[in-house]
Amino acid sequence: MATVGFLHSAHAHVRTFSDLLAARDDTVQARHLVDTGLLAAARAHGLDSVRAALGDRLRRLVAEGADVVVCTCSTLGPTAKQVGAEMGLRVVRVDRPMAEAAVLAGRRVAVVASLDEALATAMPLLHECADTTGRTVEFVEVRCTDTWQAFEAGDLLTYTTGVADAVRRAVRSLDPPVDVVVLAQASMLDAAPLLRDLHVPVLTSPRLAVEAAVELVQPVR
Image 1 (cartoon, rainbow, N blue to C red):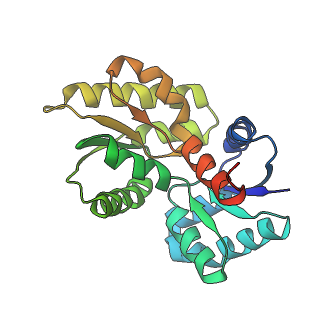
Image 2 (image 1 turned 30 degrees about the vertical axis):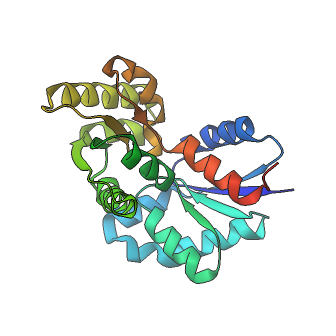
């Protein structure tokens, strides 16, 4: 049976990605590995400091049967992808499918992050995707770093509403307006339904990443 592995930096993501995978294709199995120390170490000491640990976690997921691994942390994603490639493993960055969709969705894109490190990995990816399509896209950074403490504390409601409020204030103040909003971290998934009043597309990464992973492991039927 096809299996998708998920490497998480927070326990909150396990249910999110399990549910999305089951909804997308309930014949595909999930394997989850959570290591909350990886993100903390990367923020404190840099991404190079977690390369060996990422390799170990990827190997563990593959040993448990994963045909492809989704790294659900935007900050760790680029390094996990690189380490996986060096090991001959298929690794999906959680934010790449979203970035590819974003540059096709509009010419002016708001990019929202609650961690500076996540924004630092998201922006090069978005520019790369824009260059690949040959489109001229303007990116507007929206930081809501004061909300991250609530996520770390497990107060997901406060985190989600805080992100949504910050996005709403920022987007409504922008002139010219943006065509699309990108919530750059998987942790922001539940903020999207709170932003329907903005009347622009609000893109999140989890569902698109799951779809991309399933397409890699399941033949077209």
